[in-house]
Structure formats: structure tokens, C-alpha cells
Image (tube, rainbow, N blue to C red; front, side, top):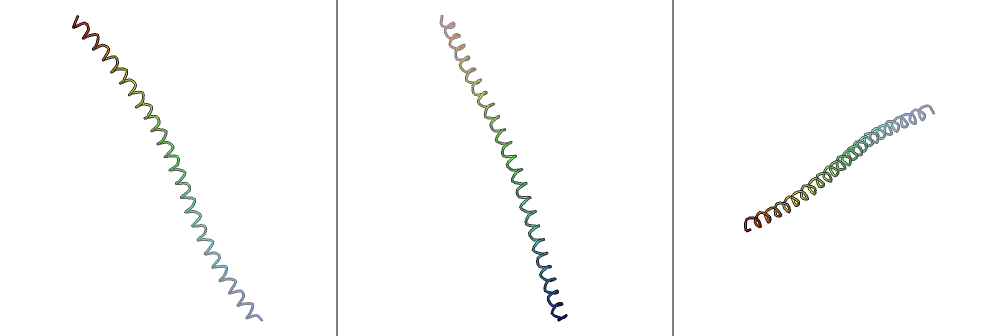
Length: 88
């Protein structure tokens, strides 16, 4: 009877060791997933920042194009006046 109890105890200890190893593996996997999530959140933040920067640059470029267009129109107007004055 005592030997049977000892066998069951050893079996239970081995099972406990197995469960402990499985728990450690799951905790390790959990850490990996947490790191991936954190990295994903960081990447999402970086993408949002890059998108905002691109939007700002796009506005700057748009404004610059408008200024160039205005300068071109003014230059053409002045050139037309100069030609008119030159011919007259």
C-alpha cells in the first residue's frame, strides 16, 4: 500500500514538473507576444508620425507650387508690360 502511494506521489511530482515546464514555456511565449504587441504599437505610432510629416510636407509643397505659380504669373505680367513699353 505504501509503495503504491509512493508511485502515485512520484507520478504526481513528474506531472507537476511537466506542468511547470509547460507554464514556463507559456510565460515565455506570452513575453514574446507582449514584445510583438509593443513593437507593433511603436511601429503604428511611427507610421502615424511619418504620415503626419508627409501631410505637412505635402502642404508645404502645395503652398510652394502656388507661390511659384503666382510668381510666374506676375513675371509674365511684368514681361508683357515691359514688351508693351518697349514697343511703344
